[in-house]
Length: 419
Image (cartoon, rainbow, N blue to C red; front, side):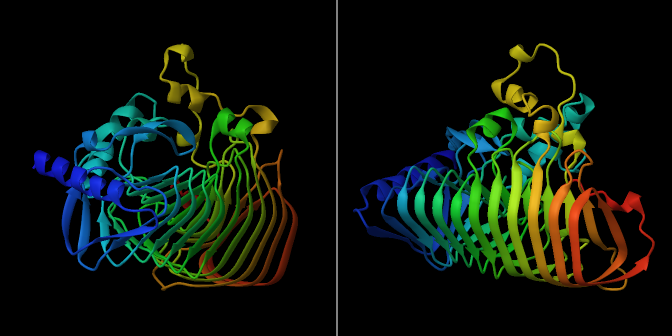
């Protein structure tokens, strides 16, 4: 099987390399179990109906490359399909990219979700670094590239994030279907320090953020100031997962984001912002409009002190002796500079309903006393929920035609959401 995977990978890579400029390569119906493929500029790749690309379950079949993982620049296994340092590339068709990710999920938390690397690291007080040490392949990586289109294809069971858009411009992701099993960090689409990105008519169900906007973590990203801006997320259907999220890696800044006409079904969160006290950066000029939600546990949730066990490394001795990516996590943004500035957020028109037996919370705005959320407007909001929620440290909050139908008194203990 190993030799067959290697042979198939080499054969497909040669077909890519030999394709003419502005050429089109069609993968017909069939099963192709492979390691990493690297596309080239001015190429169209069609995954025909019945075509299924299967990810190798041997990490050696994914070459180590320089990339950024959850905000930290480090070496990491290449994705199954890589568009790196390219321009004018299109992947389309009704075929499937299946990461066969279960083996990587079990590496992280075992077959019982209580063991694996996660349990070992938690016992040693290292929850904050296990996600970076437990290397798992992505399905699709777009990195340092321009004018890229992904359309209609299916992405299934990635070992890590399904689609990462990193340091890239003028990217269109349209009509993708992303379905992931219960694996850790199996985000649907991550937009990372990129500009002019359109996510449209996608259907995403996963076990973490359905669609996430990021810009790096720690001093390195804070000093680089590689912002994410001019992103539009529209007409998407979001199933199981953690909704549309800005953060938590925001050290480079996020601005000018438009989120409109999206539907959520049985999603953990609808729209959220998350950061922590050591990220720095900013989130500003965000426009959210026309969201429909059913059985969403937290309709709108802003948490600027999110998931401390993951966000803060704690006291660590002999830092210089640690791996470089550990040092980067520890080298966070200190003091008042580490507080993320969140301002100019407008949320217009949410209609959220729920089944009688389902728990839900309408609103949670967790600003910081030292750095309040500024200029937050909610209008034309109608939410039916179990409880209202909480509002902390918001300056210039405007509520215009906001109707919340709640059943019970807010219980703070039920408001925790770590993902």
